[in-house]
Image (cartoon, helix red, strand yellow):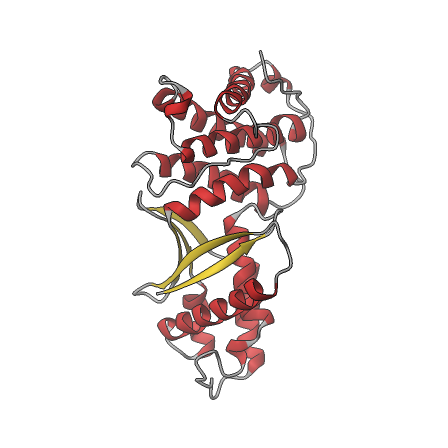
Length: 295
């Protein structure tokens, strides 16, 4: 296991894309695995062009899977298994090289980054028994990311599309407009000084209950899909995302907000602000439907 500090820039949103960038920087641009590797173990008999080609092919169709065990959230990368045959080494050996390289690259970034608005996330990097790599995100790290993503999602450059007529008269649209207005109300009541700037001036929660990770996973999957989608984007993707986000909010509202908003955890309130930002982006920016704070 290795623990490293990763810097999220103000515009970094998807942790899947962010993790892929870290892999690309440490492996492909750093070229450590083509030469001697961070562990100073030479890849004898493996020409660098073969290693480059194997890694390049993996990055064309990366496999980075999101999962949760209700304690931590994991992104799982299969790059070591994919490139092991070409590099003539075991996946476990390659995984350790990659982990060392990523940790080294991120340490350099932390030391050299001039961005005062970057958010530092502490991430565990693990090698699995099969030789894969897991990025493990603790509840504290996820609380920081949720607060960061609530602001960063507003910078996502989504193209505006024409909403289908069926959606304009659908129950889903009205549920989405209600969810946005309700999120506005909850953030105003709980965070009156900072609601407009989307900032949570509260300490991250150290624990999550058994339900919150499942809500979080749905939102993370939606953000991953929006960040990683190719062009052209179709309205159906936005509508599918709206449905997922609305269902996530309705679940939180039934479970948490029958009580007063002030009794909710910092993590739950972070989810509310993230949902609010996502609905604004999907409905107003993506589908051109004006959202309002009151309906």
